[in-house]
Image 1 (cartoon, rainbow, N blue to C red):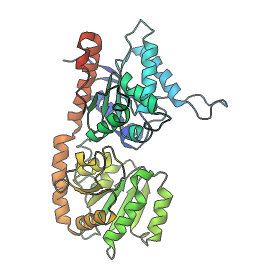
Image 2: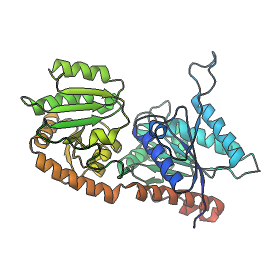
Image 3: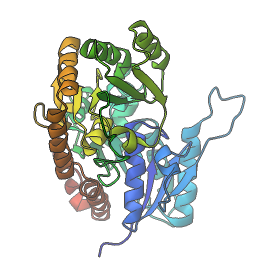
Image 4: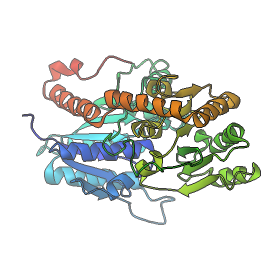
Length: 396
């Protein structure tokens, strides 16, 4: 039996994909008997409602007039060092390059000066905007490039994101990248068809969208497409989440006369119960490295209409497990929504195929094992420097 590992996981405490995946990974690894410490500046929502044996270290930093913002990243780095000195950490897994890979690498460097314990190794998982938006900005690009190369291993959640990383940080710099693709995953026992009960009887067709309402999610655009698709019908749209475009989305629904057919539920934790009764899930992003919310809907047996951007086509096979429209073709998107809501039997059959595909490719146990194996390879390569070439997978 492989020995138990002591793993520190760093993540944003958000409803977004990186925070959700990091939290679910922490819980899954703890279930396998590993000692898991999660570092963040707030308790992530998925962990807040879980009884799982994960030790959460909330580090908010010192509020001080000198600082324009509380330096959470420095406090997290210090917390990592405290835990490492007390109990020892084998691996630090940073979700999102900035600031978490930086915190992990500084902690590793500091630990290397303490010869009482072996310094932890650093795995960095790239989730999307840490590369395509934040990391590629000129003010952060050189640092992001270094974070990737200095990590003991780097992973991306899709082939698309791995290619974007190479384009932004490898080809131009000439340093080379070795990015291993490990996809996001979903708990298929939690996200399952019938979660919360499918309403019986004659009811209006229902579409659902879940996001953080950032501009890249294009929620007002999605509402406009829904209006085109459902004109003259009683179809309903439920929007779950909150963020910068929330007010604009409410306003656009009102302008289109949809206030009685579009519901804004705000932030919610009980997503399986909200997803499973839907006839279709909508994702209209202009950029999307993976599309975790779509994966969770598919796991509930709900088909997805999405834009064919980034890593989404790696999750949804158009015409077989969902429907994809060109990113800027609102009419094509609306036509697909109309078809899904008007032919509910076909949509249900599509949802069944989507569920089967999720179980085959994106189940929790399979993907968690990929991370577990990566940790062991990193540790083995560090223990035997001559085997260091086995550390990284071939570039995607």
